[in-house]
Image (cartoon, rainbow, N blue to C red; front, side, top):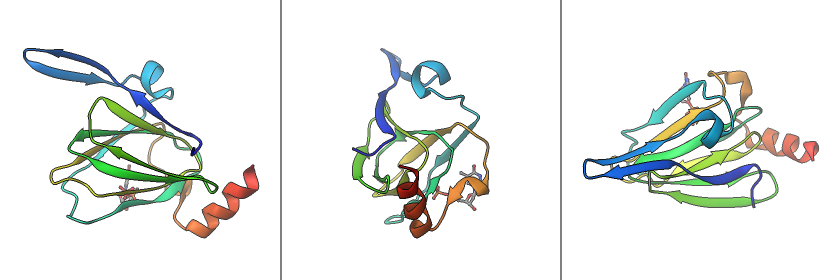
Length: 136
Ligand code: TYD
């Protein structure tokens, strides 16, 4: 199991008009949601991610369609297919992630704990690996 990561069920309300899925800082994410972004119009066959974060916590949601998230904490690897809006994936600090295999029109919604900060990124896998193994 890759730490820190976990599946989180969103609160959902469905009626004859359709469905609403809800993520709240306190109950769902477990961190203050300071930034929201989404990946869309992903080129067929393209991969996204390819980095880790020092501090950032995130919740990944397949708002439409699906995609595959591969996680690596420096010791263990895991693969998750997200393809239902009610099931999110929490990913914490020091986890390398790759996103791939987007379905056509797939939308990856991301709720993040901090504003964008390039200094928080590991863009080099070797550097990430060195630091993740040093920390434990
Ligand atoms: P990046 O995080 O590498 O993308 P992904 O994980 O989706 O593959 O970001 C792609 C580009 O967008 C990069 O130039 C940084 C920029 N960016 C921002 O300016 N602000 C943001 O909040 C995010 C997520 C990215």
